[in-house]
Length: 295
Image (cartoon, rainbow, N blue to C red):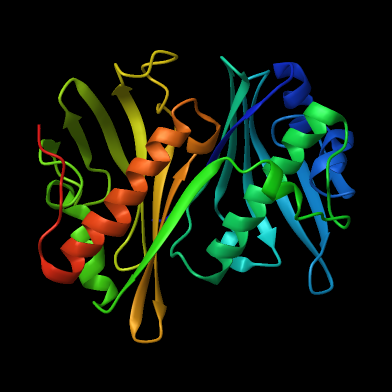
């Protein structure tokens, strides 16, 4: 099943972020000004938004582990596809402040609601970051999409190819044919674990989202990046999301590395990803011959 995942760094104290996630006053400063939220497990949160009229989403609080974890379950929503999904905020200290890892899991497909919520959560998490760092969030109804330009945490690039989505989806899973030749495990089924090797550099992924022909998510669960003098495990906790969409006679592929843009390796890694996606993967899908790295 497809999952929404975001990660970002926030300059502030971990208890400040936790309070912003677990109190009605906090929620009103970055998410929506019209919100009620209980402060105990089993309690309820009601989030009201101005979206094509007045709408609301009701959450049940499942888990509170101060100051590191908050989990909600969506009980009702103006978008029924959300009902039954789980929303989680995980907090941990990082080298650049607090690392917030967000997930919304349990969607049945990567459809219109999934896309809307993926974009919406990216915005609201940046609003949360802005609130903690400056004291000024951008909650509903006072949305300010310009904050996204200042605080992006992800890297994306796209390609469009004439092959059908089913073919492209299969090609993406054949990692050794377009990314790196040295691969342990496979990337061709939900829950699979695979490791890519670039000499002494290696990254281990687990497939945590899987909708054939539409979406797949690779979660980084471990890595060693010996060339990164700041942090050899800097990719840990980041995730790679692939979205496939019909675009007339073409299949549009959007690659996103969640959390990459705030890392020290961002410039180097973004340049490398651009080459692998727009040249090697494009060639492999189009001609059957990619340009994988070989050590």
